[in-house]
Image (cartoon, rainbow, N blue to C red):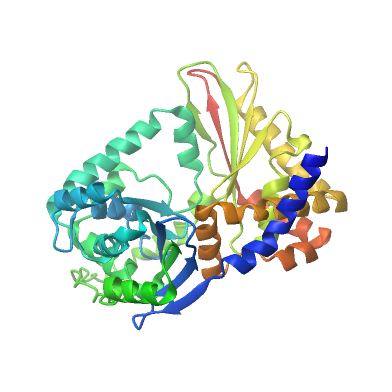
Length: 421
């Protein structure tokens, strides 16, 4: 037991050490881009995470545009390099550059040896705002995006999860949506989305502050807000058609109505599973969200259902007897979630979650990727404060629980066998 006690003492002492050993250093470029440096000379490596926030109205007319736009960027010429030359430079220097579409926007993660940091940051900048997206690349990636969506839909469970996804950025596009996106739409998206004043760059690793300022200014200093490309003028409405949009506006909220048909996905094999997805409320405080994410998945009241956190969504699954009905499986899943919502958590639960969060935070200093994620959350105003975690009351925690598991926020569906109710 003594070695375990010693290990616990070391882990509990790490948060204070992490705060003194790696202190974020921040600066901004004249173009509005914010930069956070986590200076760490333990390893000859440099990590970077570039995150560009998306405005929620950018994709309103074209679902799937963000996913397609990010894919086109990855297959376009960038800066002075063709796409093949770009990939050869990455491979030759052993640089990892991974794009991602997240709930809050576009993201690129980079890992390079510190000796290649000039080249790596330059290539990151080339990819982010100096890519040349052509109509040919759009057509090729439009088809590839649809084929990828079809592959996901080949898995009944994955298809159900996609149908229940509440975030517009991550929803799978339909063929109709993809077909409606043209090259001017793509250029308009890049002009509206790829803006330095909406970007945060996190740097972690073997470089100092003055060096980081020089490199970032050299690579990203010329990034400017692009002028929106001209769009075709809307067709003038005649007196007979001028009033036509009114009914469409009135009927727009219909898909979200409680009376919407049940989402049902058929499985070639006999099965019956209910799925529930609850998106994290946008105004939920980070501390309540962090502790609820620790408490909810293991709650015994859910059994035999399982609950996990996927991004910012709580996803619940309940497998039932295949001979049962879809309605009963769905109802049983919702009943379990609402039982937890009504019961709430106790002071003991709160203290247990606070201790678990503190122990997990103690390990952040050992994981550079976790340091980068925490710095990005802090830059976006979503960081979890140790002081606020310790000050959180059980009343506030349960208030957050009731909001997250509000029946109005939960989307449900059922995976059922090839035939049946």
